Image (cartoon, rainbow over all chains, first blue to last red; front, top):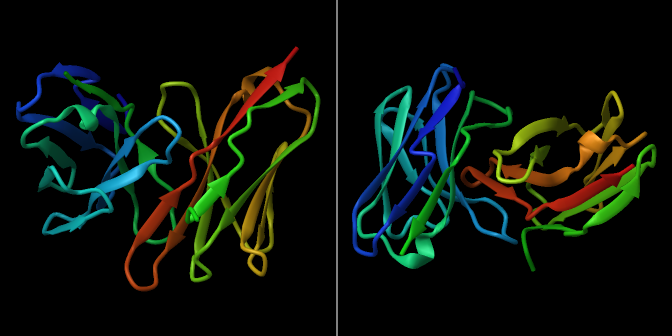
Length: 112
Length: 111
């Protein structure tokens, strides 16, 4: 099994719908992140969490919310999806300190 | 000016060639640096961290120049399997946590 699992892998949804993307990890890491990737742009941080009781906005949090249900689970919600939220979404984890990230396989979201 | 800038490429090189990528960053307080590799439609994977003294991992060498605020990645003896997009990542811990990803440099290695 993958260390960081994202569901669903692909999703097409309609404008205005609420959608949740889920992420779970078996790395035992405290830190979890949600990023989105658009063509020609770097990954941009949506939200991050350094432990279960810690939630922080990233650079593009508007229109998104998150929930850290447990150390291993971090979900991202789009309350009312819009077409410009069409993107590839990645969940990532890291250990404390200077480490790099372990990414999930991504969720390709299309809002029509 | 972008906080992390990379030449988007693509770099087209023959097998066996040596290729180098540079990445510049604007925040002098940046403290951690990384190179990631991303295959088409896949997740980024950590290639190597970049240390002040420079570091090497097989055919890959990473260098950091704090004075000029750039990091580099050198790939020797390129393989077809090195074809991917290489992402430069810069992290700042001072004044709040911030990790910035470059948009990536595409590399095509041809037989």
